[in-house]
Length: 302
Image (cartoon, rainbow, N blue to C red; front, top):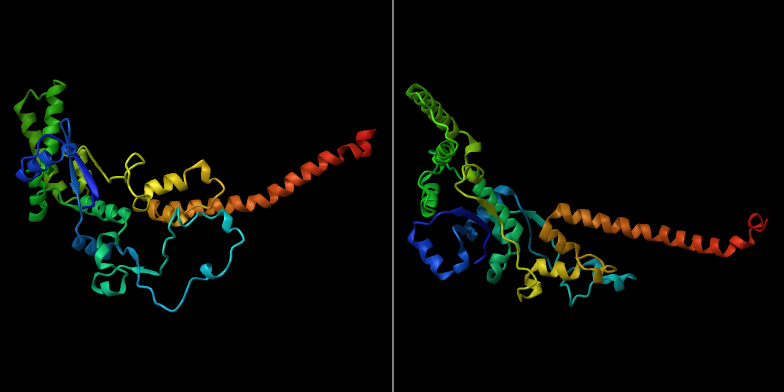
């Protein structure tokens, strides 16, 4: 099962399901920190991919081939070997629509691989930022926080505020001030219940309900995993390596792992660097010819 995001919090989980999980997996808990692993099922992915208008490849039409495969490239010696890096199958894309699944290239045996890891993490982050954490949250959100052992997440900030005041020795001496202060807090609570900024994981991180929220990276080199199933390892070996300095970049994999913006940046950087080679060669030739002819110059002889 793919882990699309991870939440970290301090304390103990009260739900029995999570206690059993802690016993089966020791790395699930480190000291007093508990890591809650989140997985988005297929139904959630296709629903919010439709909402977010994520572009996905559509089914290919037979009877044609890529022009790049038909023409010979004189610079093919600088390309990475297909044995090292498998070529990415390019296809036309369209905005994903849940009602038109038949148009998209979805393989039944590899349904979980249809959405990339970055897209899955993006969808989960979208949900976490918009999951209500106040008194107006739905039953589904309340059930989610109850599973994590959090009964009232939108009032967690009161506990942290009270603990901070006690630790600093700050206390109200008069009951009138206490009453007035409590009334102001209640008014802020009522206002924050309808405020979208008081929703989601951002609010819970501010209130110290969770310590961190982050997507997981793929395994590093020390784990023996097939490099073709791990884009991070493949890029580390065949892209971020001095041994591949004269080779072309696997830009398709860079785009899939880092996104279109970073992929476009490195594509432009490669294009710019390649076009600097001709003037650099001309400059070197001019310099060498100048060194050989400098002693034949009349001004130098004089």
